[in-house]
Image (cartoon, rainbow, N blue to C red; front, top):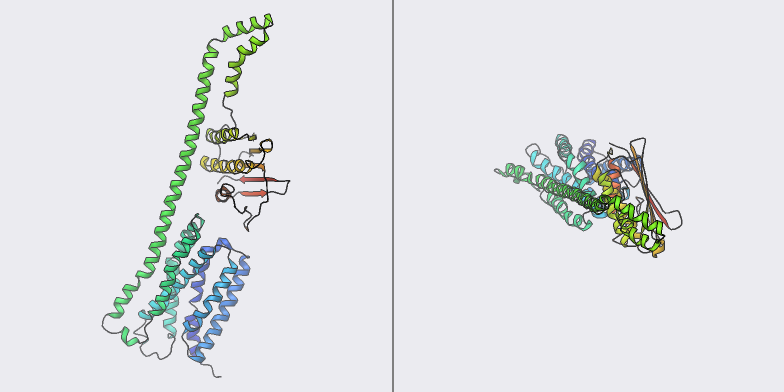
Length: 442
């Protein structure tokens, strides 16, 4: 078999466009690696080298177009891609098809761009210079979409959006990929007729612009939703603080009158004690005891944290749940965003309360605590007994079956990541579920 080296080189240059496409597919899911980065790089380099060299030899021998080799191998590429990354199926599919679409667009746009130069080309592959133009166009397109691929899509993946939504969104790049392949003309002479080439060059720009616009708009909407969620979180904390403040004022008002008549009360108590009228003394002291027991407890010096804890303590009390607190060295001013710490503590307590509600009243006990070590590192822990078994996913989080339990842990993990912290979830003790969080100020 004789090999036309120049033709093989032309195919190699055209098939090299798979590298920018691979980069575009990998960047959005880079945080979801199933295997080490080094292994992923080795696997992809081997596959790319075999695909480019083998594809170039086969295409040059049989005079195939590069798409003849590429399209059947797409399923193999996706299988490898899916093996390397553990994000949900439809999110992976969207990234893969999005990269395929951008790669297909680069090939189609190159075809119209270099059409005058390709008039005398009788092979089914670009001239060497045209392939270089296509490769540069593909790299340039990657640069234009880098922000979307590296930041906006990962942000959207962090959102609790339905996986089915990404399945529907995947239809857009799939349809556009098919269109990019279908729109490649069979005859260059048709492209050069009148202003067809110029019109196509302008019209085709709609494809990447539409993809960028839709993704960016979706990202902006998600960002606004997150901002609204943050505002709602802050509002909830303010309402808890307000409720706590009202309780304090109510307690002060109840004890104000008692303090005002303190001297008279002492005389009455002394007289009843001297006469040995214990029953009347107990009856007389009852309002004082009641006022003292109703006085709001202080768990944290920080008002926002104290309000959140007081809110869940009140809920626990109505459900016969005891929460035992241990708070050390946590001052009024903390080196963290209050709403973040309130969210962490609130989520942990809510999960713990929901878990112990399945137990008999005498077993409903939660241990919770916080400690600011060395004035900067904040340690928070919550431990509670539970009934049943807990299974964990690949990220170390409980698999949620009951919709009322465990949902907030992924939200907590996101906040912990923001502070370069660590979250440890342990259920190795006898039917006790413990979450310990360590945070470092930014």
